[in-house]
Image 1 (spheres, each protein chain N blue to C red):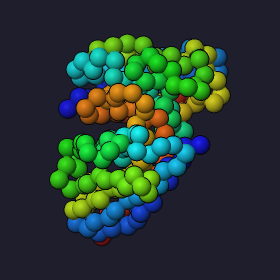
Image 2: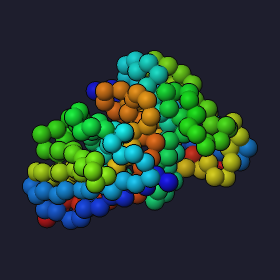
Image 3: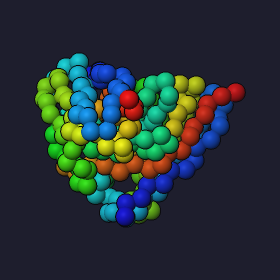
Length: 120
Length: 106
């Protein structure tokens, strides 16, 4: 059974940093691209970043480019999101999501999410 | 950036109704479109990808169609478990979601 479990969310001050983790199990982790997607009541769902199975290719949404870094540890089956220079607009529920088989960035499995709140 | 616009924002329907949700892209996205269902407190669940391919395990009452800039998600006979919010997503070298359509009980 595919499982994705996020952790690392919490309350952080504006300008601060946070690292999210996503522990994956139930599939060959290195064979799949992985994503971070966030959700807020106001802005809805927003794709944040994707990393290829090998970790060699990464893309980011314009809203986080230069501030967020996606990475993965294939030996430990874990996905990461390093978030720096956080602002109120980054407050959201952050999901990790597996890229569906084949081409294209649709997401076939999602975690339960970890909440990030940016506030003083 | 490609913008995705869903309509309607809210839809009131009864069990057994045929329901159609539309998603329009601001420019052509070929067939790079997925549909998701989300229930309160849960993560989204993929229903359809590549505009019309049904994800494994998804009931056949769900179907998707369209290409280019206009797409539809159809539920042929609405079931009690289908009351939820539905999102479209364009994907291919970037990704954007629609704002969602809430299907509520009439």
